[in-house]
Image (cartoon, rainbow, N blue to C red; front, side, top):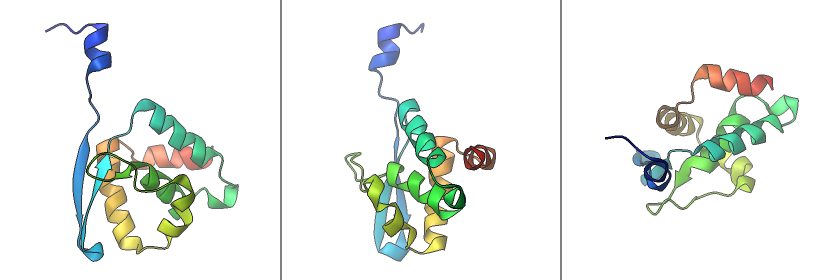
Length: 116
């Protein structure tokens, strides 16, 4: 079927994926990012001071943007990055890894962000 402009613009192609987090005694949802949301994330990382452009600061800024409730409402505000960064590293990395697969974030993408 040939798609038209309206077909594409009206189709909701953003996914919501449930992730179990037994360490937190429950689950969270990860949403796929739109192009605008991805650009917002990249801008937020680029604005970080050089000393914060690696590791947990980049990951936390990503997670606050993709963690949602079952209704696709963000769980965290941008200002929650530091607090979220204080959670267990292994748990954050597991969620980050799964969210990265959903949103096509790979190590090359992260390296490029950290250099800018």
